[in-house]
Image 1 (spheres, rainbow, N blue to C red):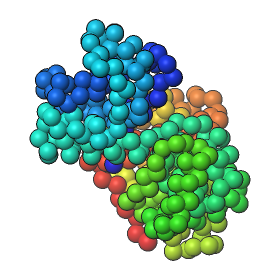
Image 2: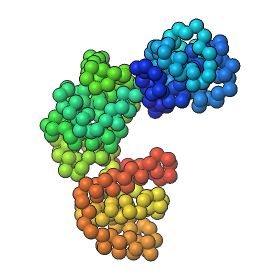
Image 3: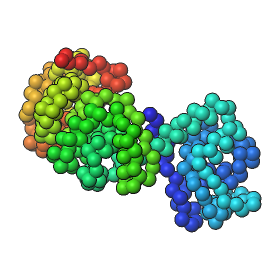
Image 4: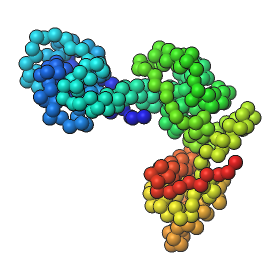
Length: 346
């Protein structure tokens, strides 16, 4: 799914001074209309056209006073002085004046996805405690849908702010997120629209339940992880087994990383973060620490060992953050095809 190309355009109150340059340009082109704007739009490249399409699609109605203020900055004549209407239909009509159908469909497909994704991007930017307070008062299935749409690290942060029993219930319901019933989707839409944001829900997701839960478990603290996995094991042993197969924590490094790939991981990591991860990791997974040190050059391993021994004790939170960054880098390298993770047997 494509990420948003820009934030939704706000509806102006009066002057139009709150608009960015690209948004003002979109207002001018919309005021001109497809016929007059098309000669100008032919000089835009596809990236600029995408930017225009996003801006014009987010417009509702722009008052004449705002149009006049915006156009005066461009030193362009206003014409008949009417208000202008935006929306995806307006964007499509103007793009059709200068592009073929295939190009228009490609750009507008991206724009539609961008507009729909804005809900989750805005929720992802909200403080975790605020999102958690909102979810705590909703149905656990609603909370599960919301968490499934956020990045794993952000969802994990929200999860840790939820009351323990409620959080356990939410994790169990994540197993049903990809198979949402229509009534559940409607519930989520109504709740989000009413109580948190005013954009549409896009609830599609191709991740499996185990992937969703494992992503959360990879990013929560060790205490929360142990509690959640224990509860999941009691309630759904089969799902618990699959989650643990997909999960990848610091302790899994020794079992899931090829020795030949350790050097590349070390080169891609910030050294201070790596040392903090190794220092904190030695408390519960000395095997992974020694695996990392034994698969780099002897000289580098000796230097790392000396620096680790000289480091003061690492706070639990700082250590888990560094370990999470290390795991994130390993996963990123795997996604880029620069290493292959060993999948454990179940």
